[in-house]
Image (cartoon, rainbow, N blue to C red; front, side, top):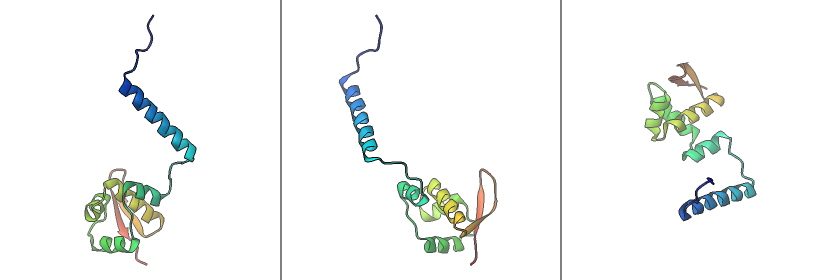
Length: 108
């Protein structure tokens, strides 16, 4: 008696396109990119560590939001950049909690 209603033509086209994209992606064997460089590239930002360190040395306080405004990038990209540089021991976290982190440049 009941049952699902018949989809409109545009809804069927959208469903078909999504199905084709999914199959194409599976066919290529693409997996999610997990490296930091790939994530930053996906965000739309590639960087040179030397230039970033120069910018950080001029800053009084290094926070993700201050770095994002200085480099004209998104906040998520700035956070990822600082995490990556902390893993490479170029910067270290001085103070912080889950909401705010303050970093300083490690002098070599």
